Amino acid sequence: MNSCLSIQSQFSEYLDGAISGAQMQSIASHLQACEECAKEFAAWRDVQSLLTSLGPAKPPADLGLRLRVAISQEQARTIRHRLDVWQMYWQNSMAPFMARAAAGLASAIILIGVLGLMIGTVAAPPTLAANDAVTDSVSTPHLLYTSAGTDSRIAFRDPVLVEAEISQNGRVYDYRIVSGPESQAVRDELDNILLMSQFTPALFYGRPVPSRAILSFSGVSVRG
Image (cartoon, rainbow, N blue to C red; front, side, top):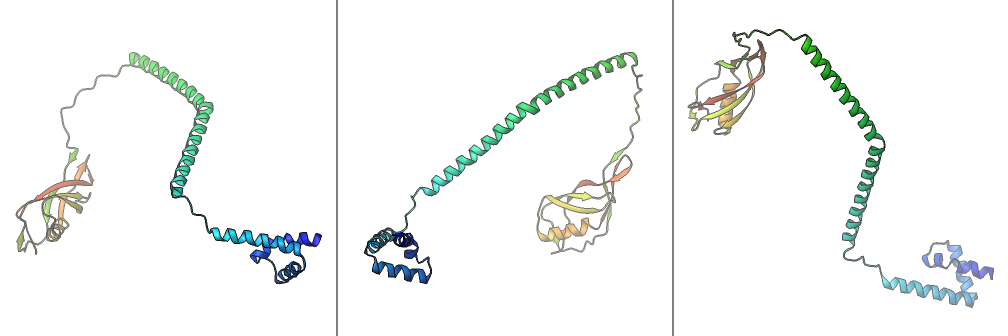
């Protein structure tokens, strides 16, 4: 009996070929000699044949949609849980602290306002006299000269409006065409003119600063 139980417990591995050759030979010999185990093994083999004939199960047509809906619902529950945790943390710890801080800040503002009113009443500042003299503290860039050549064969058909970036040294380091033709020939000529031009830099309280200038080119010829 113990031998039969041991053999029958290995039927699944025997059918799958998941045991050693010596064990398979031992089981096969036992099945030839034991009619009861042979009938049990035949039943196991029939069940395996039926399962094999069924083939792989086909997933439902809407399985992908169900999975996406389930994932979306789980993400929504996770986000709501995090929001609930944060709200609870805020109500239990941060909200009382912020309320006390706001009350202290309001008291400080009121105290400062009262002190300022008292100081302003006791020691009012003297009236300042207006100065009619206007100092030229701010100036815009102006073109001094350009060393670009003018031997050209093709003229601009339309005026070109350019916004130039001028450094604190009065040199153009970048520009963009605001309106007008933007062909490569036009850009080549603008490169030649602007990059070889010298401007008086813009001044801010007597100090040179980077600035922008709007330049208009009309009737200027360019190389083809």
